[in-house]
Length: 217
Length: 217
Image 1 (cartoon, chains in turn red, blue):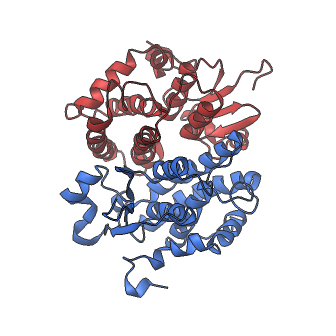
Image 2: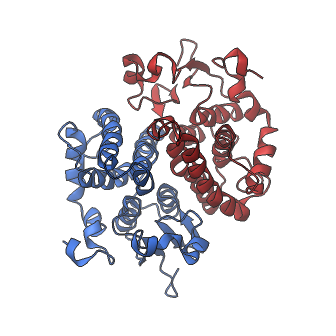
C-alpha cells in the first residue's frame, strides 16, 4: 500500500498477465497506483535486487495490498474476488465456476507461458515467430472448441468472468505475433464484445503510465 | 461417470498434472476409475479423435464427474474443493488461500509448462536436459524463497493444501531431469514430509494401473 493506503500494482504496459489484473482492478473499481517495471530496459528491471526482494518470481504483475505482496495473476484475481466480491468475476454455480477456471488455466498455463519472452529467446531469431504462432494456434484450437459450448456473450454465459480477463490479453498477444484469427470466430466475437467495455479499455497496454508515446492510443 | 456412478479420471501414470489430481482424489477419499491415456504410445493417445472430443485440450488429466468433463488440474482441484470440501485443500483465511494459489500457479504456470514434453521436443536432443534443468532451477529458486516465508510442516503452514499437490509431482520431475536439489532445503524437507502421507503414496506414478511393470514399486 502507499501512504495513502492505495494498493500498488507492479506492472509492465505490454505484459499480458499484468493486463489481466488491471482489468480486474478496473471492473471492481479498486483505486491503485502503478509502479512500472520495464521487462526489457536495463536487462530487465524485474531482475533487480530490489524487485526480487518484493517478488522472488521476478515477474510482473505483483500487487501490494492489505499488507501482503502477491504474485501470479490468477492468484491475485482470486484474492480480489474473495475480498472485494462486487462485481463478481466467478459465477455462483460450481460447474460454471469450474468452466471459468478451466478456460483461465488453459490460457494461463497452456498458452501464455509457452510464448513468453524467456522461451522465445531460446528458439533462435528465425524460429521465434513460427513457434509463437504454433503454440497460440494449438491453444486457440482447443479454446475455440471449448468456447463453442460455454460462451454466451462472453466466455462463460453472459457475465464477464476471470476467463474473459485472460482471453483479451491473449488475443492481443496473438495479433502481435501475426496469428491468423480467421479459424476462431467465437474467440474473435467475444474479444470484440469485451473490448467495447470500459474496464478493458482503461487497462489496455496503449493507455498505461509506462506506455511509450509512440504506442499510445 | 461410469454406470456405477464413479467419476472417471483420464490419466497417465507419469504426468505430473495427473498426479496432482490423483492426490486430491485420494485425500478427499473420492472413489474413481482410471482410464489410462498413454502420452507417448501410438504417437500420443491424447491426440485420438475420441479423446479430443472429450477434452479439446488434448491433455491429461481430465475428470468426468457430476455430468461434466473437466480439464486443467487446478480447475479440477478447485471444483473438488467446492463440491467435496472435506478435508479442505485451501485454508479459510483469504491471505493464506492466496498464498496457496500463488505457489500452485508458480508451479503450474511458471515451471511445469516450460519443461513439458512439447517444449523439450523443440529444444533438440542435446539441449533438452540443460533447458529442463534451467527452467526448474529458476522456478525452484523463487519457490524456495517464497516457501521460507510461508511454510510450516507443508507449503503453507501445517495443513496440506493445493500447493503441496503441485510441489511433490514437480520435485519428481526435477529428479527425473537430474536437477541438483541441494540449494533447496525447504523444498526437499516439505517434499519428504508429504511423501510420507498415504494419499501421496497411493497416487504415485509407480503405483498406477498403467505403470509399466519395470517401473512399479
